[in-house]
Image (cartoon, rainbow, N blue to C red; front, top):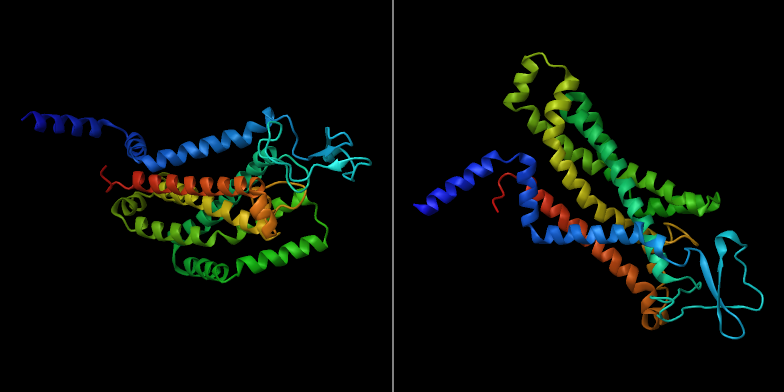
Length: 328
């Protein structure tokens, strides 16, 4: 009897809770999702706040004089040419002054790891926001209006699915190199291009969801009551698609960051002297560096692995939390 009463009390408490509270409760019960959220929080703090406490700059090259004393020069405010009478402190080992040593250009790896994370995170968020804006808009229009509108938009989606992404990005990178696009502006061009190319899967998923929601009884009742199309979309369609969009965005963040790292590794992404985790891993261009200078390429590789894994954990947790059939 006591167990029955306890269950009834728990059911009453559950009934009183808001949908948001229930989603949060289910999400927090997923241990991997919570771990992923903690990893993302740590990386955000490390990349966004960490550089303010670093004694070094992103473009600071470390030299050694004839006595072996270390001298640093900020190449962002200088010509970047080799300083007379000084020797660049190439691939310095890990020490108290350089926690992860210096890279092949004499720059502090730990500091560049922070700045590189900023670029990778900014790239991921901007691309996902852009692809969601395009995909949700076109997918929503196709699903709601149907008929010839749906047919035209879906044929456009099919065209974008057929575009070979990596060869196209290599061609665009070559064009930007020939046009001498500045390295700092190159990353923004790549963000726009990648966001424009990756919206097709978002549009197809949103269209499928809206097609099913459109035929439900409450949608038919809303139309019969004479509600405006804009009000139906804002009040009824968008809230029912929001959960899918959130899960999709979370899981796409990991894949976009991984794609940016791959492009940077191939030389298509952010170029010298700016740092991203992808072009930091690109330092592994021969077996000597891979074997003898693990401190240069392993930290950004681990950072990419942890961040992508964390976004996938959070995406899985959100998917399960938004699913009302999941009983945890």
